Amino acid sequence: MKKQFLKFICVAVAVTVAISSCKKSKNENTRPEDLGDADRWITVAGALMQTTPGNGNGGTMVYSVSVDDAKNPDKSISVYDNGFNVRSQRTARLQSSLDGGTLFNIAYTGANGGEFSKYKVNGGNSYSEAAEKVNISSYATTSPRWLKLFDNDQTGIAVNVSNVKITTEADGTTYKYARGLSTVLSLGLQDVGIKTYEQYNLALSATEEAQGFYIGRLDAPVLNKAGNKLIIGVSKSKYNTATGANDNTGAVKIPAKSLIVDYPSLKNPTIINSAVSTGNTNGYRSFNAFLADDGNIYQATQEAGSHILRINQNNEYDNSYVFNLDAALGVKGSYIESWIYAGYGIAYIMYTHDGSSPSVFNTDQQQSFVARVDLNAKTAQLVNLPYEPDLYFFQYQGWVVNGDEVFIAVTPVGKDGNIYVLNSRTGAVTKGAKLVNKTGNHYIGIF
Image 1: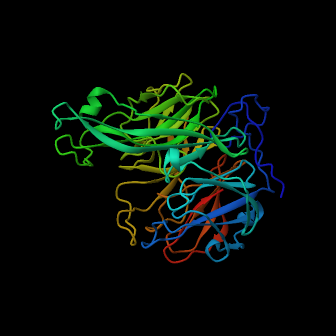
Image 2: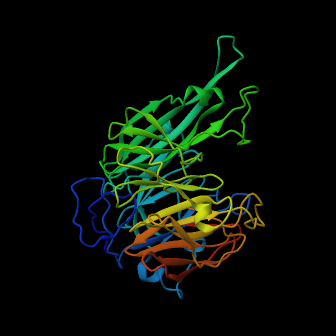
Image 3: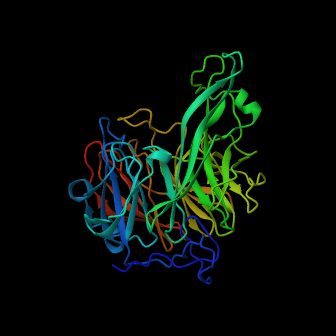
């Protein structure tokens, strides 16, 4: 297969962007500007159920097809019957190269949890595993969160928070603060190995810590336009200061935050705060912040009434930018599960909201939807897809942007579905290949 997925853009972005007049920038934090490549591989990933339908914790299967086959509604793909099992006890944390010809994986939990490996994509269920591997579990545990940077497939960033402990005042009983050990690690994707890592005991403000708040998770790193800072999403957790028990009431709110560290050294951690949102910014299993072609970073929040926040080129939240998804869609309690920036200020968001139908398999999960979003106009419109209660995207990981086309996998739990191709320029929706499902399973991404 020809492996030219993207053409180079003038500004660095965290996803594929197409701007026809630009040439490749010298900044290594560039993404190729995407002309679209009819000859790249499209890898479809499916999650196996463990004991509960839809939990996706039984492992990951992959299968690759051509772009033409992915777009062909007469083509049928059964990843569970014919696919390749990617090594991971639970759901594999997959990334793909810019040209679609390589899959990168860090196994999640289990005997080989934290092991980085990569596979050459040969088509169908043929994936050739490279001999080079590295295990980062001694630094970032067996269950690290990670994403790759868009520096021409050179670097991945793994993050983790572990060993959160409560510290008391001198009397031994009065709550003082809780902190964990935060790890940020850079990983070579070509010359496989650990580049560098740093560990910090990150503190929130004295007031926030006295209320019981601490940093519970880090995820979704993105490199700024200058290529000298990493912005990392933050999940805030809270203890009841009187009892030491987890406090999940959400009655007390503090600002949304990001961790910023120098790049490539990973030193000098600082926390920035949003005045727009009180949500978390770490996402779940996919990218949650993107460097757009205007040079700003756009970051989703996970909260009831999710926002898209903007971080400017001074690496500070731009609090003049207010984009609330509830207001844009006319719903209540919208919650962003996954999203992708497609260029020209256009993004696609997977979300749920208050009143969405609960799944029959898992009543804690609600039906999901997809919206086309204009970040400049701050508008959003529901994408015309076949929605039903057992379609939910909370575990969704992978999108492919190929020119003006965005490829997604849409399958309710345990039911057949399809690849859909979304035209970011026109908003058109086209049904692609059929995705054959199995009881309790669902498809979680396109790579």
